[in-house]
Picture (tube, protein in one colour):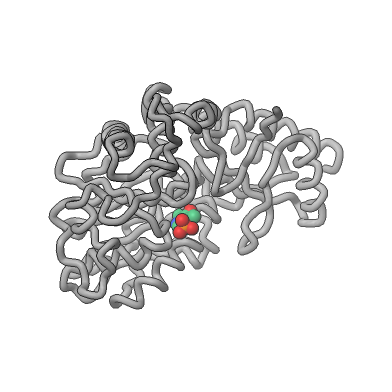
Length: 360
Ligand SMILES: *Cc1c(COP(=O)(O)O)cnc(C)c1O
């Protein structure tokens, strides 16, 4: 069996030990005689899996007691609507920071439910930086301030947490959650689709401060009402059981590794390998402002697009896959999520160096 190095932006690489354990437990989970996929979500086996996953996630992120952790469906894009439905709390407007492809989607969805104020935007720089807080125009009456703390496509990451005064800060952390420690107490709500840095597609994680829930718009579907789901331990309807199980194994893997502080050290080292190389060659180029570069998603271009096809073809033959950039920005993109080993980044940089030697 040969595993390749998969640089996909999502669904993405998972830790090999997690996949091995899932394979071992596939037909008979812990002597239950069943696969996790076959279990009732109301049975004691699955309830234990779910409870452990939540406890481990709380421990990893040091989630304060006054926050609910919800395991939902509908993806991060579902949250683009579900957040305003739940968090407007009788207010008319919300502030959004526009930093790229995903913030744009969040904004256009929110507009169906409220007035959206664009508090800041990096569109003038083609979304290659994170707007400095000094220039934001925040509305003190806004229901919340929404940011996309890692723009997966443009490769721009907030390495700082904005100060929004008394207005709750909401972040779409889909593509960098669990890549570093996070001060959860500074946020009103954090959401993330699992398929980037946590587990399989189908699971969406929401961490929300308790006092913000319970005032959903009357049209909110019950299964997307945070209060309803919080009171039902995320089981108001059938949760994505197998995705919760795999996410739980990933949480255990992270704990064994040493937690998010250790994970961050490794991620910093991986990103440095690639960016250092990009910065000392004329052949490749990273368009993103240095201080805002994402550790998770690294877009880069070859000088002139003429060699893009050849680059991808040869990369593939070296066991390096999914390096094509998103169609909206072109070029290449290497996603270096938690489960991408340092070795994978080394092999990538070696390949890039060789390609440059041949074609530069
Ligand atoms: C992938 C992604 C989304 C969309 O997630 P879905 O699970 O497909 O809804 C939203 N926001 C960010 C930052 C993403 O990376």
